[in-house]
Length: 304
Image (cartoon, rainbow, N blue to C red; front, side, top):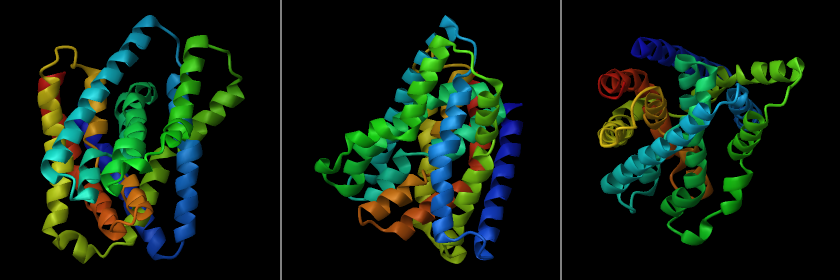
């Protein structure tokens, strides 16, 4: 059942991405326009998705479950970073970053909320926060090759971390918010899937499709990110008896997402091959339409 819903959602997201590509090719989305849309997504939409997930009735069981989700997120990241290091080493900087970091924000959160409901974002936030923490520390070292470039400030002032802290406060204190506030947050959060995929469609429009589908290297990196990382993650989960059920499947969806969009952003920032990074993002996103349901089909047998 979960696999069927996931397949439907990945197809919907693929079609939305094609819309973004078409709008870009027709000149309706410009380079500056894509940056503006990305800022809207990062600074308004995703924080509202996180806040909405925390707007639920407080219970000790939920708090305990969130702690479990954080532990499972750490286990998943140990798997992805380990695979990235063993397959790419430190010489292939973009490839290492691409394998280590999935697109938990743009794709993971929309998929999880579509399959498991809005409150499920409550559990995937642990993974998304860890993505931000490691991208601005470990990720920067990998892609730049310099430890001194680590930016701890960005870990704590980024929108995901701030909205998570505010969300936790709301969850624990349980204030009565006006319906106009919760309604507004809900409407903004609902824009997440469409906006994220249209932006990815814009990225895709900037890549020559002939080159995208002709490079063996792109397929290898995408396969490691989409198949090897989730497979190793599942095997490691099996070692821990508590890593079962819905929370584990939610984390696995986030861990099995395609190459993070931030790979291109960091590549550009640290003078790496920006177009190569964009190609990894685009091809892995297209292939994930098939791999995500496949991963979940297998995972349901072992982790449910």
